[in-house]
Image (cartoon, rainbow, N blue to C red; front, side):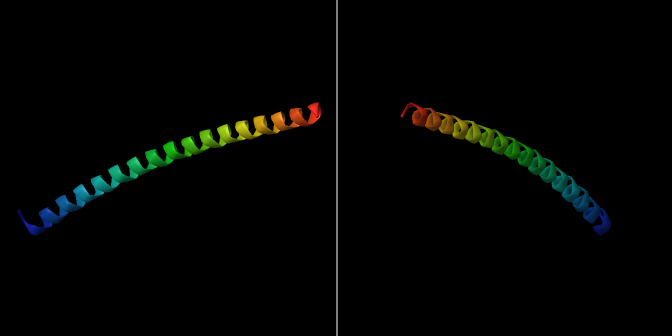
Length: 61
């Protein structure tokens, strides 16, 4: 195998591995963003519930 063929194979494998890493990272980023959005929604719901409970307690007093 000549030196040029070797480096072309190395380049092709390197590009393929870079592409796999890029796709995996993109999927992880999307999943992490979905998790953050879900947690933010739950936090807002808990905060709104807490505020409503505090307002109800103040009205009772």
